[in-house]
Length: 390
Ligand code: GLA
Image (cartoon, rainbow, N blue to C red):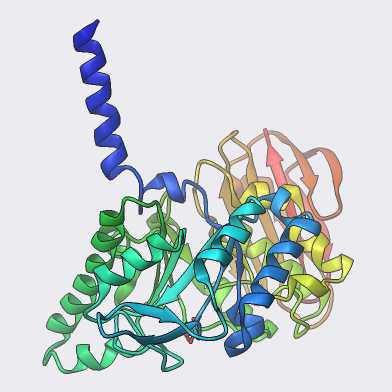
């Protein structure tokens, strides 16, 4: 008995010490939440973050699975004489803000850079990694986006591509270790725009997510360039470590409803982090409906964690499919053309020989049993998203 107790205590200790930060336990499924950058950029402050947390709850987004409230760049002030980072006057009390967000059943995220300066020229973590990680932990932060920015100058000075690459990996590893040392679970989100095939090494430097692209813009051209450009990356993602095609633009006003539906569907198929990037306090019902569709979220959050891949692209028609934990498949039928098109698929393309049961997710409609070919009208720049099982 006694020995069993000692062994289980030891086991718990070992799980506790290394099983907290940057492990599947903090991102077993792709993180869901909100980030300040796409809508507010430099105009973010304490009151706005609180309002977003309030709206996350009142809109039903929290109950649909959105948990992280992430402050992006421009919160930082200078360091004090001891080198401790402080928040600027827009964020008078970061710990109080974290307490407020936690009080709503949500989590708080923050942003920094391995370079001396962030992308918006605020204070970065260069040379202060451990100190900053301790500060984040003291503030009860749950998520860190770590954005390369000015570290590229340090890399350029390294003299060779190999040396620069190693410097970058070391910089991410340093912060990973610093976060681990705090003992506080924090999602570690890498942002270096997809350079050097980050999907091949992001997990090895402790990344729970890594950006695979440059910055998204609130335009169909930008969103689809990124979204459809994720082909081939599926094998690098899985529970605890995800490809990140950047934050959502849904609801920001630059795309049509069907284009935002494509955005949501594609990101869910891609097992992408779902970080809303709009103003949650002024959402139209149609935006809430897109962001909180339970069946779409279930695809994104599917516990198998198998990202979709392209089955085929023919000109302006794209077919993507994602295997799900219950043996079914999510299938996206995308129309990139400026007019509506009837698009035909054959269930054999997805490995089904006999008849299948299909559901049109956005229509909320069971299609019954289908065999072989299936033809469906897809709106311009739109999608038909199916869930299919044997
Ligand atoms: C980079 C990132 C963006 C955002 C800004 C902030 O451009 O890619 O997502 O964090 O920096 O300055």
